[in-house]
Amino acid sequence: KNEEPGDFSVSAIGIDYMGNEHVQDIKFHILPEPKAVANFSFFPVSGLAPLKVSITNKSINAQKYQWNWGDGTPESTEVEPSHTYGKPGEYVITLNILGKNGDVVSKKAKINVAYPAPVAKFTAPASVSADAVVEFVNDSQNATRWLWDFGDGCVASTEKNPKHRFTKIGSYNVSLKVFNPSGLASQTMNTIKVNEKLSADFEWNPLSPATHRIVFKNRSTGAVKYNWDFG
Image (cartoon, rainbow, N blue to C red; front, side):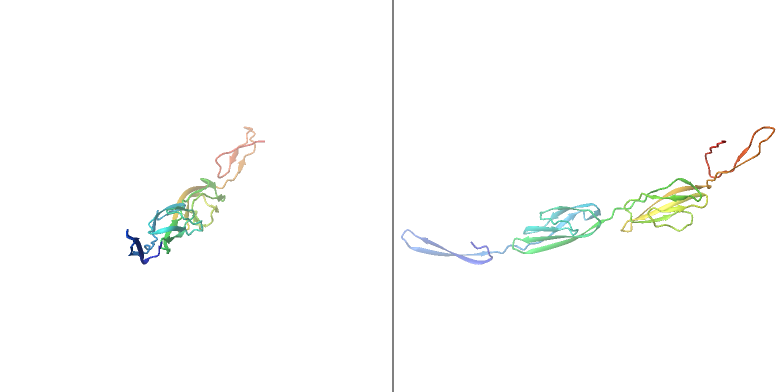
């Protein structure tokens, strides 16, 4: 048995009924194994992390497969594997095949796994007193950079959860613009009402001999409720 490609001959020997020997040479040609071709496609070709990718193997004359995903995860030897990219980034999928003729052939393809879109969101009190320090709670998602505009002309902040003091009464539109690592942005706005600074104060007039009553005059500012205790 000869499996190597090339030209070969085989001698067939036969003996007839009279005992005579006859020899017949048979020539034949063994063709080499066709060349191996590594080829594949995948779907989807891009998307948001986590991204599951399914492979369609289009290789020809291969007997073994080795898939490298480019993200440091274990390789696969399946014919048509699938793979999930957990983190954003640009990766190279590499297919190495062993052909039936012993050749090793490779095919590479890039895949882009994008960062999820950012969503801007924050919470803060709807109303505060002047000179009070307001704490902003950042509830944004998929963001790595933040830009705050407090609407009062003060310098913007790039902190994640800033604090800010409003010194004048009025209504202020506070906006938050957030960015993901790819530079994609999202923006939201809330209105904060700044009231007069809370201050408790009152005046009173001396006891009137005629009415036996004391008159109190409330000089408080920034209050909406009052509680008097006359001792």
